[in-house]
Length: 101
Image 1: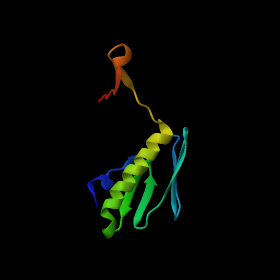
Image 2: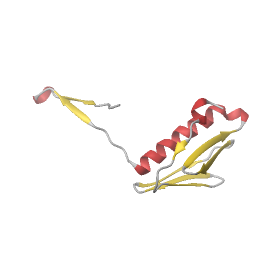
Image 3: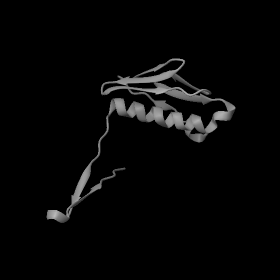
Image 4: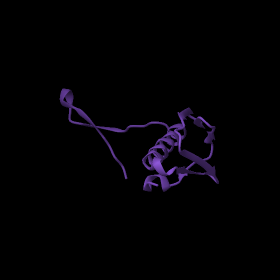
């Protein structure tokens, strides 16, 4: 299994993950997102953490699905936000993304 797929997905309070045979649904305060579940990849949620397991042939797909589900959880809990910083004055002002660590 890939290294990314081995990392757990932290599920904050107020976010519910529903797993069916065909679909993964993430519901939170900011909305609901769903994803068609690929064959060979399983998701288990226990104690506020999600864990991906994949079949032998789907190693890369396990990491991809883990990243997508983690982004879905972040989207329904925090939402999308982009902070910009204006540099310059007048018509030559440009915006650039501010990254904080």
